[in-house]
Amino acid sequence: MVARQMNAIRNVPAMVKAFSVFDTAGTGYITVSALREIFEKVGDMPMQPEIVDELVAFADPEETGQIYYEPLVARMFTEYETAKKLKDAGNQAKKG
Image (cartoon, rainbow, N blue to C red; front, side, top):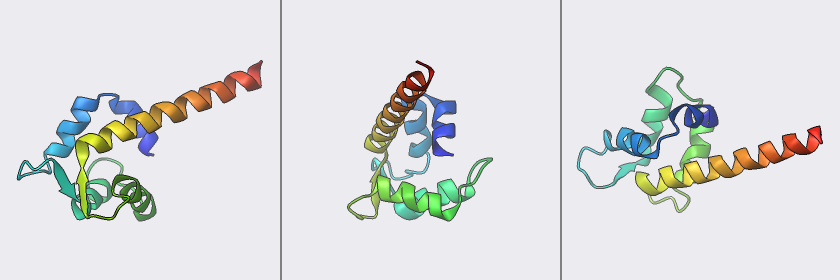
């Protein structure tokens, strides 16, 4: 589901701006509870709590309770692009 949404956005600045809406203090981070609320309650396709748990673990691996969203978005896109390349390479190997 996250991959589908990332594929639709494909724009790091837009995604950072979307997170910044929830950063009302302008600190550069949002809380874990805010991230949970975003993905469980906001948008057309709310995520299941288990998926949100995985995203939180990815976003806040040290369990600080704070998620700096610019580095998070960068990591998300890096991971997404890497996974996409591996999938594409696997598909090419199956064809050839």
